[in-house]
Image 1 (cartoon, rainbow, N blue to C red):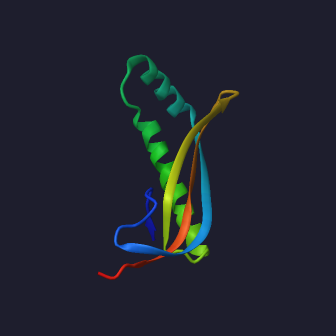
Image 2 (spheres, rainbow, N blue to C red):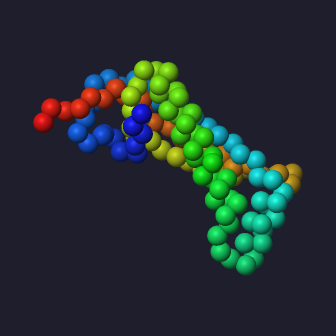
Length: 111
């Protein structure tokens, strides 16, 4: 399954547009990750724990997007957009990733 942020795939043409699809993923941040992120706010630098959670959320969302595209009979998803958000309150934090794109059937163009 080809997944791209571009509106087309080099060397291929879209033969059928199967519609907009999307997937979402929410990951909870545990107390240790929140604590380490707070320390990074003060000391500066990168938070490996937060980066790992963001990567996991992105990968899970893209896997779900591919699954939905496959169910529609697509062999590619074009125009993919990823949005990241954080929800927090009541002492809890959640990272949220939403991904959308257009499920399509593509075929190689003749050279």
